[in-house]
Structures are given as structure tokens and as C-alpha cells.
Amino acid sequence: MKQLLETIVRGIVNNPNEVSVEERESVDFPGLTILEITVSDSDKGILIGRKGRTINAIRDLMTISAIRNDKKIKVLVKDDRDAPPVAVSKEPESKTTEDSEPNYNIIDENTSNTDGQGTEDILRDEF
Image 1 (cartoon, rainbow, N blue to C red):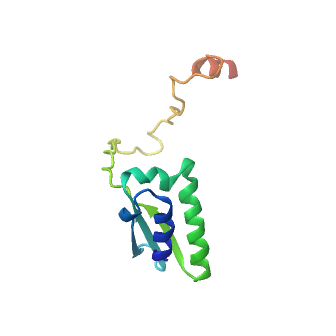
Image 2: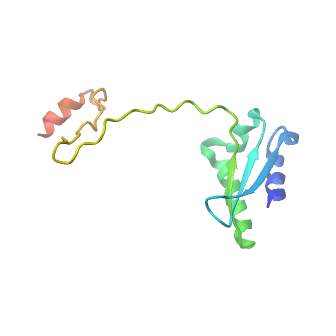
Image 3: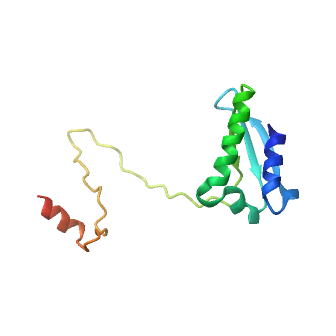
């Protein structure tokens, strides 16, 4: 499986010598093999393709091969960029249902529809 994936990826990228595929077994899902593709930064766009079409086609081919060999696989593209920090909000301790008020803040007040009406105008028209 690893060799097949390497051959496919090397055939479509500009820097085939920088292609590597790491194969490992999933810790969380027994029987699942994870194939992680590493390519040069300049080749990531080529590998992924417009709207992910290229990588999805590769995943389809690999899935067909895996099914024929009675295996389960997951194909991933390694991203070497540092992940942006995730903002963690500290929520206050949850209150009991009697003490808590419902939260209706589900509409962004700054949004407007195509007519230029604000959200409050739309809601006013509805009620």
C-alpha cells in the first residue's frame, strides 16, 4: 500500500525526491492503517488540488486497493506548519437549570442580508 501511494504521489508532484510516506497502525482504531504523505511545501497545492479533488481521487484509489486487500486505510497529508494557537474561553461554572437563563445569542448582530437590512430589522419584520 505504501509503495503504491508513493508511486502515485511521485508521479504528480514537481519534486518527487522529496516525497515520503509514513505507514503506521492507528492506536484508537485497531486494524486501521494510516498513510501520511509528506511533500515539499511547493507541492502541497498540487497534491491537494483545487477543492481537494486530487487528494480525494488519490484517497479513492487507495481505498479501492485497500478493499481488494481486506484492509482499512486513512490517507493524510502532513502539515509541517505550526498550528495557530487555539483560543480557550473560560466559561463560568454552569448553573442549575432553575438558575440559568436561556442563551438566545445565536445571531451575529453585525450580519446583514442582501437587502441591507440588519438582523434586528429582519427579526422585527418577522414578529
